[in-house]
Length: 299
Image 1 (cartoon, rainbow, N blue to C red):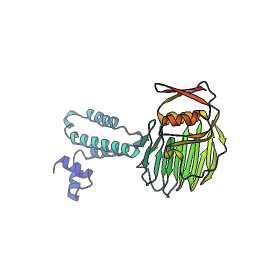
Image 2 (image 1 turned 180 degrees about the vertical axis):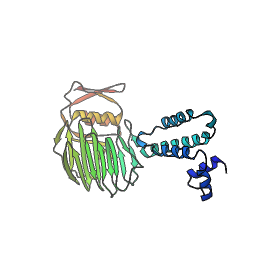
Image 3 (image 1 turned 30 degrees about the vertical axis):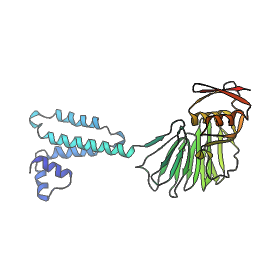
Image 4 (image 1 turned 120 degrees about the vertical axis):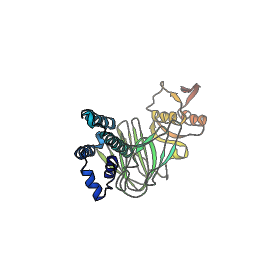
């Protein structure tokens, strides 16, 4: 059996006792063992396939020319090890990222059969390979409604706080200067600003402009936006208009008004004219469309 076949069988741990003795008798045996140990010393977080390949190549270039031929199969093996190791690191650390655009919603099924309804201009991130019976974690930017299967702790991490559950249904909305969690079933723990709040079914937690707002009882089984309706109870107008822009992919010019005025009401996601009237009529405003911009004016 030639040298290359012995090396390949050794890498597969497939040598017979006789072949193992032949392998150990190779004049290059010690160098091959050192190269193998060197490859096994790679650490995934700092692994650089090209750099390690070049390091091996640099070692080879320093050997006498007369001995270069036997390095050829070893170099191939080192390259294969480097590529496989790099591929393993890449696939096990690669996150799944799902993003919705303006006027778009999406339903996602997670590895444990939990489901996520993602509202417009939102994103979730999770890692399938790191999703285990003991670890369930999703990062959220925007708004999403979760139906979580019972099991280990399930964390929703947002820039404004972390929501922790076991098995329940809840909605998380994290926007600029706005953080709201609503529990529809089960129990939800909200960690925000170094404070933990426990929500039971029918309760919600709301922070606007870094101020905790008294919540209102929840009597529904899911958020209105699931049914293409945005609803608000005493919410600043700027938050209402921002949600309108997300659902209809338009710009609203309301610079001539106090956008901190509180608004209570709803608007549909299916008809922009009806939606505009739902906002402007209670506030006694008019509007006009200029290209993709809606300008609000006084009556």
